[in-house]
Image (cartoon, rainbow, N blue to C red; front, side, top):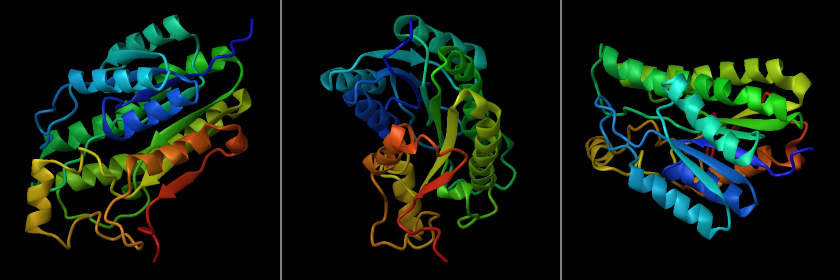
Length: 272
């Protein structure tokens, strides 16, 4: 029997962009497998999401009329991520939407040789996206109806502005550029299964990644010099819902022939 319900795996789903994507997709009738680490990373200078945050996402998904399986797993650990994805598949069936959203940043950490922060950023932002693809692609292929992978990158995945020589900013730009390579390679790999793969590139987004005590100190010390101060339109940040709108388009039938693209949601950040 052909599976008719739609199933989405979303990483970094406990708050911010991931929560926005989960609630919007649930409102459209999609079953949600919501993945988050729900613990801090020592080298990252702001608090990450908690188990309570992930529960809040679940509550909001259910309030929107959706079904959700919550998974506490670190995208850097493929075995744990695979086990969590498999638990969602067991409950809802095979996947046809993937939103690889989990990511961290280290703006304001000036050390040029901080090997640990470099590895933690790259391992979360890039290795974690590859792990997400690896953990979900077999299910999407098995489902046999095609699907859509959306990889959340950044404008720092398309441009180099904001680099300050630190290990943290180098890691962020390298990881977000690397997502484009993963996206293009996956678009080629899965095209014959009618699986589309695209990346979204936001400017700064108004989420707890940006609105936290550490970043407040960074902005106070350097109000004109942040990597996110170059928007052409008169807004300092976009909202999670702006990125979600792009996600909803890319997973829709309206984008059925769009694959291998880099879609900016950047308020003109990249305009020269």
